[in-house]
Length: 189
Image 1 (cartoon, rainbow, N blue to C red):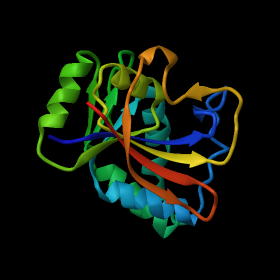
Image 2: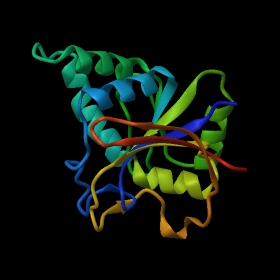
Image 3: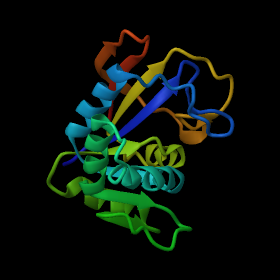
Image 4: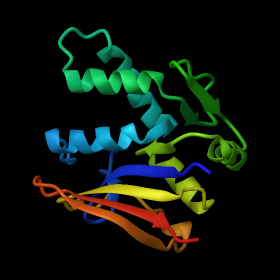
């Protein structure tokens, strides 16, 4: 069975977005780009909530035609263009980005079908509301967190307070020179 892996950047106080969703606090340098690329190379699919999907579809396809795009950005743009993507939204009418499926209902059933398909793990990129829903339903298998050296004070939490207890087992930890800690946990079932 394929693993569903939540991939997020998180502040020391547990937030994955500032009070207005801002992400300008995330440490993202060459070291972190290499880390994200390695994680994507292990993936066979991507999942998004509506808001994160909107940010991705508005940016990454434009990189493919940008003559000034870096080699790193082009590599990721090609990867995300081709990888199977699933967006979960009850309000979107369509998802027209290449190789994208829109799921409007039956969240559990849709995720279970994805998990049962052959292939590599599937990454949830950010998408806090989707992550909260899937955590509550017990559908996330692993959490890959890049713990950033910042305290936000308030914002969008990685784990919703009403989701109850989720026991985790540390699989891997990595300290980056920029001060970020890469942490990979599996859910203890």
